[in-house]
Image (cartoon, rainbow, N blue to C red; front, top):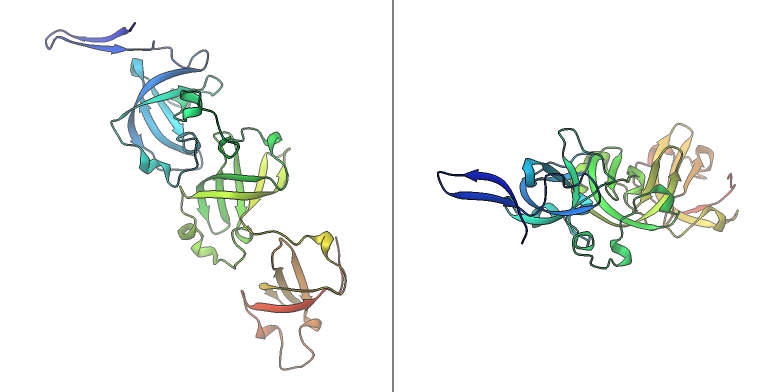
Length: 274
């Protein structure tokens, strides 16, 4: 092995050696040995761990760059103080503090072939409507969750898109905690000019184009207003309005008879406004 002397301790007769020079990551994509220092508390940036590199440099690994496979809570699978082989991205800017962005994925470190589902989507141009994607929750709150699809792309799941069932907004952070793996979400909106991606966990089968006036549909109460009921249609991303004049033929049933989440077993389509 050809090594570089990093440090000399004459009193203890110890040499600290490195297999890579201190300029690792400054030019071409490179590989290095990295010692896990800390597991980070995940935030919107998606940083999962900090490593010590040769030459007293430090590197960070994004949560989507820990393993090729989509593992639940991947931070729990690595240990502080252990040495890992890492791949350093030359196309990534150093973070504040001079930390290099790295990957522990075998496909990059050892050249292992990726399966189609293991590929990371790095550019918004590579996405298509209806495409299935996976990632990790990096932010969670009453309005929905933010999912890291890769080290360069995040997507949002709105509250109404988290489940086919009605979810209490105050329960989102508990049901979808930071670090949770999201599998096979559907891309439902792409705004490339704004760099925004919307994905959904709902089982979508019914589309607007499949509906006709006179069809009978089912769903759940999404919201009750002074002028009617907004209903979320089953197996779709569609919302319909039931005007207060169409709620019932009898005075015994009114808007006050319905609350959020109530089941609507049948409703007739009277008009379609695209």
